[in-house]
Length: 477
Ligand code: NAD
Image (cartoon, rainbow, N blue to C red; front, side, top):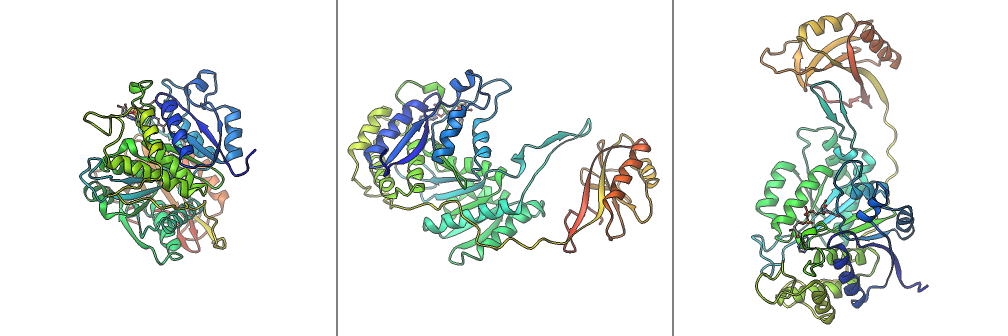
């Protein structure tokens, strides 16, 4: 075995996947990449063979051995029972950072934003994507939005290390912390804390709604954007679209031990087997992979050959709308012939090593003093709020007192408005006058509720951490 080669796992995928992957591997090799690919089946054939995750045990073994996955698009199977392969791989391998560069190649690729050159770094594992959902009453379903401090710390640190290694000057964090003060508030706060270690990088924050509007309107104003999972999913598609180049967009998913590189586009079954698919998205993802494994020289050489082709109007039919478009394999051959050339107008690429997943250099924070000071009891109830409050008052014992009832977050007792529309899902807050409440008192409260015929759905303990309330106060509190 040649020890100068970097082992990687490669999947040819479905649809146009095999055509563009073979073209990309040829180009990477001709550009001087030193890779030892292990090929694994993935997607439709694997699903058909009965592996519901779309990947075989041997595939997992290869991924865990190499830690680097170069993946062509796969088709999402129709029908139930099949899991999303991308979500499975991301979660199983802990690929917590999704990195999506969105660059304009004006005037060679049409765009209204010729100066656009931004990178979106999206947290990939937490937020609403934990996939914890419940139907709690006939009227109400819920999805848990989970955000952890360690999760925020490592994505924030990755974003800063990425910016530093790529010569990027500014990071804009986008959240909705004006509404979600605890979850998005934590994401923003940790961004600002970690940012203190990177004083040379400009840092700001935008509320996600105005941020998304600005990306659509003036994307050239941004450099690196850091967001929680859901917002990042949405704005990375907006940004790729306004760059004018969804078909050219690459994506990297980075974890502590593994990383996955792929095109943003799907398996394009409508053009599969016709030798017309554009390999550029997958190729640019391959260049991110080379930078990741420390082969930045080869990445820059190949990138410059590709930029020079773009400038000369050389490309596949989706890039070159008039005559003279090349097929997938001919385009690859043309790029191979251009190795060593550089673009004349577009900014040439330089070797850049992307950072490994960062190791936090902070000592873990001391454990805060946690005190349980109340409980929200959620009740399934069809009736008016005053009768519910009267029933709940009978549950009070000792200093434990009913303080508030809300319906979908709006206070409806005491002093609610008759105009407030209510559903069958009530949050009933009991507190102990601000002092600690033993957990057994909470269990006893639920027992009394059950004995009184009140159908509780769940409880949420109200805790203070070092004296600071760790829960939203609710209206009127
Ligand atoms: P798609 O991206 O495959 O295709 C959308 C359009 O873009 C089609 O007209 C297609 O011909 C064109 N297109 C896509 N890639 C192209 C390329 N390289 N060159 C030229 N034209 C290209 O999106 P879709 O049709 O919504 O999805 C097809 C399948 O791919 C679905 O099963 C979907 O679930 C899957 N998908 C997979 C991934 C992935 O593996 N990462 C991502 C998105 C979609």
